[in-house]
Length: 557
Image (cartoon, rainbow, N blue to C red; front, side):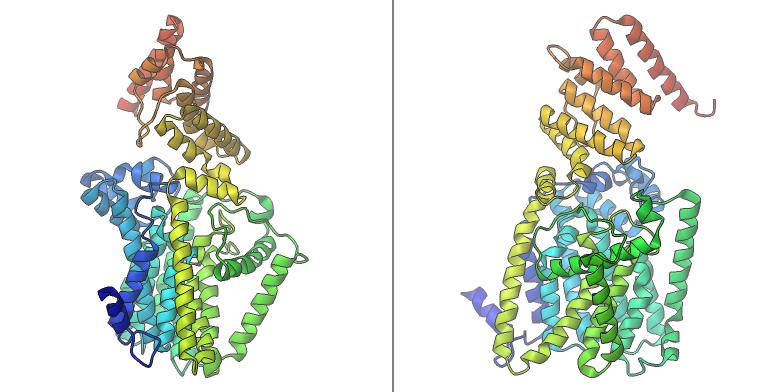
């Protein structure tokens, strides 16, 4: 009863909205904690393993300089990745304080989600949105299940972080965009760039915010004052392009020539994503990662055609909707377009054409704009607004609570993808490793074989040695821990009575074919051949292993 009374006090008698700003934010935080109450038991999945569990740079303070100067996958031994030092520093501090605690890493993301919702509410108030609009938009945005991929997925902290610093920067600029505020906002801009590359659009979001809040919105010279933000953005892009030119792409692009080599096809495909994103925001059903999204090469198909219509209507709204009643919707549409632009693939091809997590920041401004526009219909219907918001909040929060369970473990994530027709084979290698750690060797072997098929079809040659090694362990019936450590003693103990030694030997041979200097594969083969009394082959692999150690000890020779 005391809790009910407390909630009632949050609302004034004549208003459907919380009576005080602090009360509104308490309610938003409470709602986020309730919606994500099902996340705490979730395990490390997918890229969580690469960025956190297997990241050797997180384990010792003396590797901190390497962590902060390397790409984010370097700690796992992979050359690809992105430069996101702020995200990796937070992971490092949590690891040092709590170790591999899933609760600690989940707490980081849930706390950031609550913080971002409160910042969105504060930004809405500072930008001049109605009090009720700012609260409703922030609350419904915070509870939307479309964002579970960013919150429940521990590896997505970068998305939460750059949006946090982006909002802090915009709040700093408001309301008058004075020069000293612009230089203070630069600090948050730099931090956002250290979280994710998409933050490069911050100056454009600042310009859109100025467009909404300032009466001089039609004067081009009024926007010149934010030149330091644009200069930093341009410098960042130049450095990023130079790095990309010298070291190659930091991501593995699709490799489909029709997509990578033809900008028109990328535009058409990007247009086709717009109705898909819109449907998920309106009706968030069948949410999953690794979606199968087709490549479009013609406008004469309904998805890109609908996308063209949506863009045309948006441009009409922006051009003619500069009056007071239409300005908020124009702001929301501009915000969405700008925030989504880095991941459309139009200028630079992306490795995933469609990703639910990419609308996290774009939907912020859109929710504010749509809520302000819709509020005009409820000016004399406060009770109706109260009921509608409560129903939507409960429905979205419940959907989020249930969607978090999809991320419970690798197996639940995998079957969710497969059930909805996604690229389950992308996750086969990770699921196989999970089965291997659980001692489910037949299931592990099946998944590793699927992973090999996927790697070969998509020319992922750098994956082959690791997958063949894992498949060999599955045939031998040897478990791997989270660090994927296996001793030769484990191999020897698994050999008596094993019916798949020949298959394991074949896979270890494939490992060496892909990487002749794979020391552990030579050791494992030496142990197997010694068990089979084939001393000639055992001695050969022992010699190879010793030579590899000598090379590593004397790299210059």
